[in-house]
Every structure is written in C-alpha cells, then in structure tokens.
Amino acid sequence: MTLEVIYVTRHGFRSNWLVDHTNGSYSSTLRSPTGIAADPALTAHGVDQAKELGQRLVAVDPPIERVYSSLYYRCLQTVEPFVRSVSSSPSSSPEDAKEGTRHCQRQLHVRGETGLGEWYGSAPFEHPVPASLATLSSHFPSLLDRDYQPAVVPTRMGESVDELHDRLAVTLQRLIAECDRDGIRAVLLCSHAAPIIALGRVLTGNMPENIEVEDFRAFTCGLSVFRRRKGASSRANRSRTATNTASMNAGASPTQTAASPSISSGVDNTSNILGSTPEMAKQTPKAGTDDLQGAESDPRQQGLHAPVVWRGGRGVEGGWDCELNSDCSHLSQGEERGWRFAGDESFKDVPNKSILDAGISLGVVVEGNKESGKSHGKSSTGDPRL
Picture 1 (cartoon, rainbow, N blue to C red):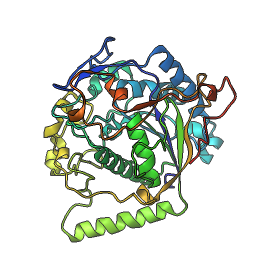
Picture 2 (cartoon, rainbow, N blue to C red):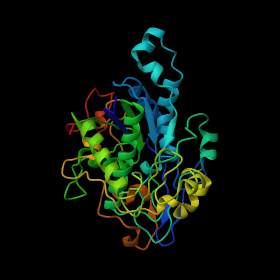
Picture 3 (tube, rainbow, N blue to C red):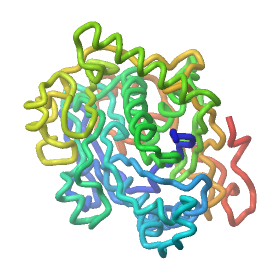
Picture 4 (tube, helix red, strand yellow):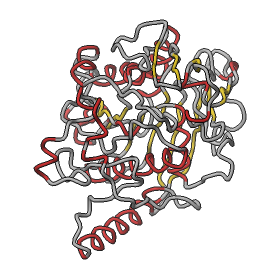
C-alpha cells in the first residue's frame, strides 16, 4: 500500500508578536508558554477551532494513520485534540482488526517536522527556532514521537520565496517516500500559512507566474485535501529507483540530495544525514532540541544543490490533485485570518521600524467569509476545490 491522501491544516487563531528587523529582536505582549516570543499559543478562539477541526478529522475517509507537524507550539496545540481523541478511542474487535479499520490503525504520536516550520524572509540575522523536545513534551505529555528525526532543517537566516518552495519540495518528497515505505494510506500535515501555500503548489506542480496569486488558501484550521494521481506512486517508485541507481553509479549515497544550499535533509531517522558520515550523524542533534539554537553548524546545513523536479504540473512524487482548498465548513466562525504572499518579503527591504506580527504583516491578510462556517450551513467562498 502506498500513500493516497494528504490532509493539510493550518494552526488555529493565535496571539501576535513583534520583530525589529534591524537586529532580529523578537518580543511579544503575551508571554509564550515556551518563552520564545515567536512561538505564541493559540487564543481561546483558536483552541475552539482546534477542537472543531479535531471532530472533522476523526471522521475523514480514508482515516489518518500518521501525523507530521511543525514543532511550533500553536501547531501542536492544533493537532492535539484530534490525536488525543483517536488515541483514546476504544479498541476495535478482532474482526475489525483483520479488516484494518481506523480504530486499530490510529494510536498516534506526532512526528515533529521542522521542514514544515514557519517561513521567515531572508535576513542579516538569525530567526527563532522551536522549543526543545524536552520543553514541548512537558507541555504535551506523550504527544510527540521522541525518536523521530526531521527530514529537513531550514536555515536560520531566512529564505527567499523560491527557497521556501524548494524546502517544501524536499520535505514532501521525504515524507511521502517514508509513508510509501511504511504502508501509510493517509497522513495529516499541520503547518503555517506560507508553507501551506507552497505545499499546494509543490504537490500539484502548479507554480503561478505571480507568486501573489491567491491559489491555495490557508485559513486558520482550514482543511485541504490532496489525492494522489492515478499511477503516480508507480512513477515515483521508478523515479526513486533511477535516482538511486544514478547516485550509486556516481559513487554517492542515494540519500545525499537536497533542494537548496539553504536546507539539508536526513533520512532513516538516525543516519545518512546530508553532508555527514554515519559517525557524524550519531552526533547530530535532533531538530527541536536545545542544540537547534546552533543549527547553522548542523551537518544537515551543508547541502548539495540537487533540486526536486515538480513544476510544470508534474508535482512531487508523481503529482497530486487538490480536492479541498482550506475548507472551513466545520468551523463555527467560518473562514478567518487567511494569508497570501506579497513580494519576496525579505527583512532586508522593510521600512526602518519594528513590524507588528511578522508572521502576518509580511504578506496580505485574507479575511475570508465568516458565513462559510457550519453555523451558516454554507461551503467556503467560491469553489474550495482546485
């Protein structure tokens, strides 16, 4: 069995933060639970959104068998109600277990993936990183898979729009291949606005000429669904075989590829990290640990340029079709706090003043349709399908 469906959601409504672009100093009015200004918790409304999202996710078909999430606090808060709900579900009968029903498949732990993390524009300073796994585990007991090692570690100096898309291409290629290998049929990804827009483009292969086009939407706790194109898994397997053969003929490990010098990738969770020997890999800190504060010295940052081919409608790993585009029909208040790109948004080009809520102000807020929620009995504005 190979991966068939990817469910994608953005974190719920959150509190804000400030950043001084001249020196990279982040601050916030409300203290973050992790003590990191750019790592705010959900608001009370955001918590309600997460609960409503969880109810929707419990009922999806095919059922979710694995969860990958950004390690920022707001994303873990968003997926927690769903993961707790399915993990506490009563065991299925032996007859159901033989048939592989959803209850016996979904004793879930969240795999913290930094490749799905927040996008920060290019800057002359280092941006924040998520809290350590130890800190996060104290806030979310038994939620995280402590043995999982992320596929991609973004640079702390920020990324251009192209680099963001390349980062998502490598991340998705690694995660999809991992799910194919493990026989996972459906997976949930939780991320942030800009990565979710890039994710939609990378999966479908549709990159607009104008990056500011509102193609893939990213409302808080909205749900997008991507289904694998027919024959895509076979094409992806043939492509992997060809790539591995070419790499071995060239005398390189088939795992030694990356999308951009600004990112690096690792596979098999413990070794073969890009640019390192197995011995170095054993010493490489897991993303989400305190050592990630020095991520620029991580061997996974020593990448080779080998871009994933996905543009022109091709899509990563054989291509995917978007069936739902940030649908919010499960949310009482409907579509809220969407976002789209507004230029390359480098921190080097902003006015000489602090920026309110860097995660929102470096872009355009899309308010959405409040009447799209379940209390109004209507679907999202326009056609939520692409």
